[in-house]
Length: 446
Image (cartoon, rainbow, N blue to C red):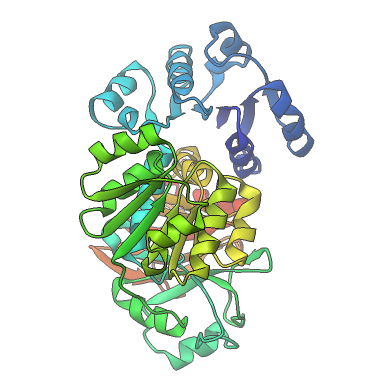
């Protein structure tokens, strides 16, 4: 596939690296100051210019493009570039926007008619992830597949976890009929696909595919327990903070800190059931006055990653049980996870998750890039005649850098075992490292 990625931020290089080894012809369209650092790592064609210039897009061979992805910081630039790109011959166009109004209802349909096939709003995705994490308090990260028949959960294994020092084979022997399956371990900056003899260790990040009725057993083995959230503090009244407050204010007591007085006034009109506090979250005395020690969760989503990290660390000092930080610098993610912040949200990865499915030839129903590791979880639709349906899992030549977690069949989740035979129509959940993307994709092509 010929893919042209246009942008002016960190996400363009992240997308390029994800797709680089997957037999795609990648071309980048970015500012000169960004092209130098990318060309040192990747052997790709790079063009510079104005993405809203017809001549510049033609010079980048837009007519030969199968997929045109625009991820500039300015959403309107992305929409205009996508419209021009489609009309100049690109087969499909995806545009990133920051304003949620562009991605819903009449606006979305209008832009689609003008040539932008898909509009992605990272802020909307981030707010949805945060909401899901508040309702699943024991998980560090969670992602639901079709109708929640299967879910991916991330759990950090503390010293109290029952699985510490045990292999997967031993755990399976001690716990018959498990309703979950470990699909990855992240340990000391390395991600591995666990096999039967692999042993769980303290501080491992364990990624597990589970059925709904397996969650409580999973949490028990992982040394975690769910707890009730009533009081929530949100720091940052931007798009993510506002959307999160809207999602939560009907069911929880929500306080939102916003330093800008004008924005605070607007939020007071927009959020009827949220207490708006016009103040600086760096002010410890103000936080204490607003009872931070009584909060069950603190969500820091300002435009400054360092502020969000420090706010969550401060919340932990006051005994807050659930902290969620928006961290936009990809280099900060693993550090943030290791210093005690419960969950990291990254809009770049959220955008990549949405986009990457369109680079697959097989049918992808949902996908998520995982925070802090170079890996992806896919939900594929198994087609009749595809290689995945021809033999039981243990007889397939499935890539070593990928693993099947389970399938959804007839509205029921099934945890994968070696003798499971995937059938046409199944939704198949696959965890994969980037080097196996293409090989996994081929398994699902009919």
